[in-house]
Length: 105
Image 1 (cartoon, rainbow, N blue to C red):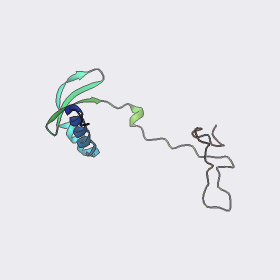
Image 2 (cartoon, rainbow, N blue to C red):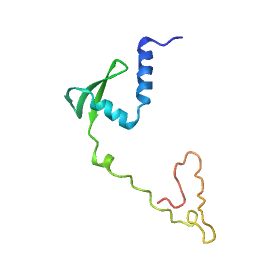
Image 3 (cartoon, one colour):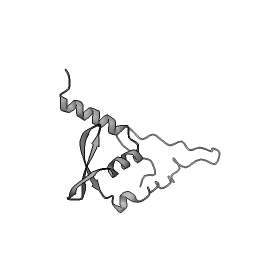
């Protein structure tokens, strides 16, 4: 069954946007026509493959801009390398238990 014209257009736009890298996407947003400012940010219109796309530019928070914090080192005997090996073998958590490592506080 063929897609509706609206879904066909959506897929085409999603594909076109998905092909853009970060720099290309930023450049596209920079060319947008401002339509005003709403709750939380500026509203823009950009053209993608001849179709209007509405963009909401939202400021990132300090938490989002902060560098990622590395996970603390594992310190239990199950996760610590032995004196005779150069690598660490981590136990695999049981399915559905997430990151329940022996040394997880």
